Amino acid sequence: MAVLAHNEEDVKLLARLMRAEAESEGKLGMLLVGNVGVNRARARCLDFKDITSIKRMVFQSPGGFEATQKGYFYQRARPQEIELARKVLKGNRYNPGEFALWFFEPSGACPPQWFNQWNSGRFKAHCFYTPTQENCPGVYSTF
Image 1: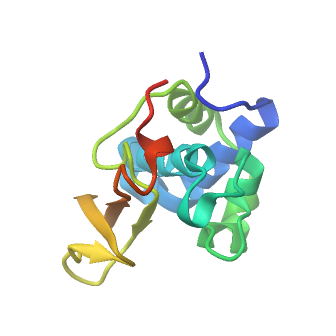
Image 2: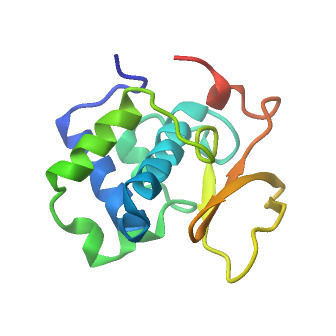
Image 3: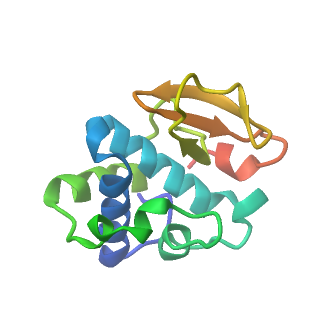
């Protein structure tokens, strides 16, 4: 069962985003980006109140993903990335991205907070940031 309404084009779009943002960090890195994307489309809070679909999440502006501004994002999704996108759309969550709405790559250590959101952990080069359940209950809802 899917945790977010989608069609086959949405799966491929999410797969392209996951690859473009985190291919260098392997499968888990891409799955973590997928978690952030799905969380943003489900959250209905903070910067994501009007994000109601995968397409709106991927192309959110301002505040969206930098990868959409680069040519690599526009290459066709490969079967491996499509499979990973399907996993996060089925509700699989991976630490430290399971409830995260943001991630970024700092030059050093992860700051404890980023734009008033708490660090939930680091995976390779990226730090992940999670809203409080009070501010964003939709991220924490069960499927």
